[in-house]
Amino acid sequence: MLRFVLSRFGQTVAVLFMASVMIFAIMRLIPGDPVLMMLGDDFTQDAYQRMRTKLGLDRSIVVQYVLWLGNVLRGDFGDSLLQHERVSILVWDALVPTFVLVLASLVVGMLISVPSGIVAAMRKDSAWDYGSMGFAIFVYSMPAFWKGILLIWIFSVYLGWFPAMGYVAPWKDFADAVWKLVLPALTLGTFFSGLVARIIRSSLLEVLGADYIKAARAKGVRQAALVYRHALSNALIPVVTVIGLQFGALLGGAVLTETVFSIPGMGRLTVNAILNRDYAVVQGTILAGVLMVVLVNLAVDLTYAFLNPKIRVA
Amino acid sequence: MARQLDVEGGFAPQATTAEPTLATGGLRRWWRRFARNRGAVFGLGVLLLIVVMSVFAPVLAPHDPLAQGVGPPLQRPSLDHWAGTDSFGRDLLSRIIYGARIALVVGVVSVALAMAIGVSLGLAAGYYGGWLDIVVMRAMDALFAFPIIILAIAMMAIMGFGVVNVIIAVAVGFIAPFARVTRADVLAVKEEPYVEAARLAGVSGPAIIVRHVLPNVLAPIIVQAALRVSGAIITEAGLSFLGLGPPPPTPVWGSMIAEGRNFIVMAPHVSTFPGIALMLAIIGLNLLGDGLRDTLDPRLRR
Image 1 (tube, chains in turn red, blue):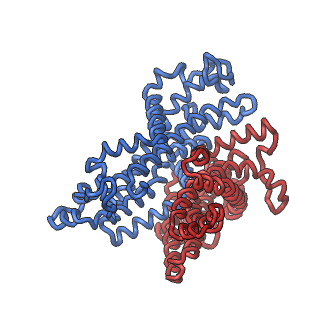
Image 2: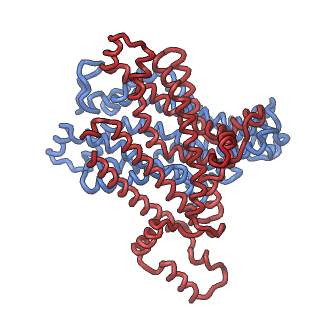
Image 3: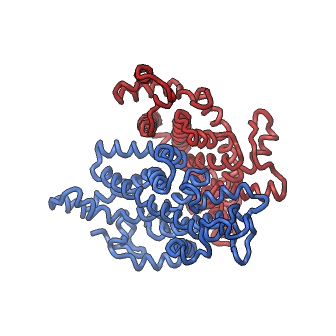
């Protein structure tokens, strides 16, 4: 177990190193001279050179990368050109609503996918099976932003049940926060449920064919008890892996969902930064996104190793 | 040659190549399996529809997709304008038909690009192993960690907005999965006796890769490509929805949906119809991808 954990940590560091090189390269590839952007129109050659030296742009590219990495590791992502605020603060403020949305979507997704996956597996090849699997591929294939607009149209404009936009932090006003999260979480959560329901179905079918289930059945355990007490916990293990693999997609979906529901998260921050050419902020949001994906995957792998005795004991 | 013992049971598949691959002439048998899969056939139909719409857009579209004021603005669907008109009085149906072109081009070209790069990297990393393998695959892990839409947004910032740049941005995001899938199968195939034999006969590395390894790892690559086309189209639509896609007035489904958002109360049809087109395309392509996976990939067939 310890060897696995250590090697997995080493792998994470290697991936983060590679990703940092890529992000550094992306930022260097952006056309335009950052010194010119900071100095504006009116400057002397002397001021230009001083600014270059100050930013470290006169040193070799390797030194520049090391300096940059040092700043990033200390949490210094630079300052936003437009909002006159540290990028790290802006990114953190935007990360929280996005993370809340993703968590709420995971909850909604599980609430939908677990029952529909179970029903589909227990009544394989019945109308229930086709119905829930059809629903799964339907909601999974619907683009998040369009689904959001449809939900707003039906539940907000037509029925008037839920607010169409806005965000409140759950620790400030929980009821209001949940109220406003319903439609966005439904938008993103159904995407996740579509993915997971199919996995629960197939892994449940696999588990139900296993010897220990056959033994339990021979012992006279009823079908329902068989599924809930014996099979489901094992069938849910692959779901953990899917959360890791699809976390990037969930984050991307969150970015689009936020835009539809005017949630002040990573999506809005990134898109506005790009449209305003505020590159320090762009860099900060990419770094935060990659870091989140890598850390979630690390957590998922460690959880998986813990759940799986073959790895835990080895 | 690949082992061709097992056809319908008898021998357990020993390696990924135990079944006849596309390269070794299982095409007709594969088609019989594929045609039984209703979802996949529906998906194939949707794909053909998109292709026909793209190719014959000038013939099929009742109006010029860019002409403003062909009808009153925000008019609901009518006999003259089957899908209604947008806020500029442009015919929505014509714009949806032309929109298929961008979706198809971005979907196919970006996946082809990602496939060419990813498969080459996967072949080299898997076949040669060693340091090359470690460096390439860690780089792929890193690339895989970028949320695709965020990576694409960043690429658009570097390159500017436009169809070609959307294609490149989406392609970069899809390189890693192709490299991974290819490498995993190359590792199995390169231990096969026929590869060993070729190596002992003095065939060069690149020749072995192209002639003996690639044909036997093709099936999962095709499956991956089919599954990614829908992802590419959805990413393009997302970028366009955010206003980072091909610039207006190009008819693009994503930006048409975004535009309709402002008129959701007065004229819900403006974003509904392009949304339906996009959704049908994605559902069809996903079903097609699933069908290909179920019928092509022997490990997943049950």
